[in-house]
Image (cartoon, rainbow, N blue to C red):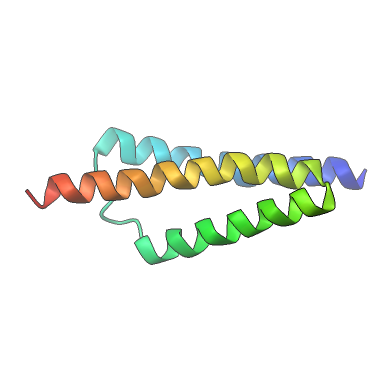
Length: 87
């Protein structure tokens, strides 16, 4: 039961980033995304991933691996679209 709760929490918190990625991709703008917040968040997710690996917690590893990838996509879009808006 507890592991199921972990999977559900991981899925929901990971999927929560998909609409943001899609919004940035569609609008080609990430100006309203806080760079500082996402940098801090990404470091936190990386630490959660390390914790999951060290404790052999598959739900933590799975959720944070995908979330880390989505965070990198958002950071990439933030960088990419801030460059194009400055030219």
